[in-house]
Image (cartoon, rainbow, N blue to C red; front, side, top):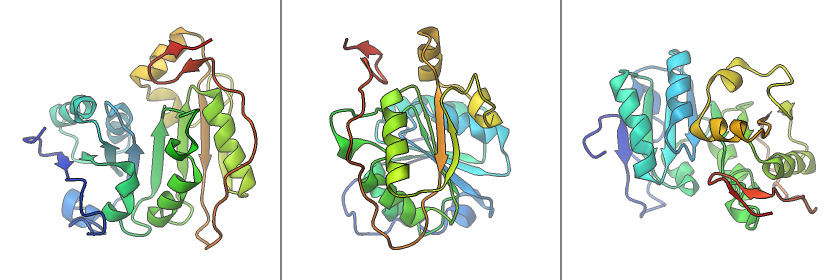
Length: 235
């Protein structure tokens, strides 16, 4: 991907050094002032590409550390000549280095690994939400689309524990009206889970910009009988 004009591959060291585009993504990278959305753990970048095609008046950045997966989405975005889509290869923990306060309008988490054995690695854990809060605009939503009942229940618990405003909470997007971008853009993982008859869930919420520290919920949540992302059944 080194030759892809729509990919930025940044070294992982120097975490305290602000990236050169921090606070300037709109004017310097996209040459406009349109809202910026991130797809975190974007994998093949299907949502980044899908949303960029649907919403030309927004800018989309797919972020992942695994370049082999990201290559497919980056290549497709180039082929389709999507000026409002690009990809950043870095760790999600590094987000505050790359984006200034309130620079991001929304965050998408599409079928993240629920990390049922390690709270710290869950992309809706308090440690990650605190990072998102530093870069999200006021009322900017975090949008979670998942096959995992565990991830859905855990994220709801985090929301309730911290009294976070809920934009949408849908147990099955096929049985309840869901936003168009939730139902029409589908990833490889979503198609896989659908063939197994697993419901696709959607949550959207905001993180108030106050100084109240977020707290992890203290409860047991029933684990999924399979490992999300790789489709390996455990039960």
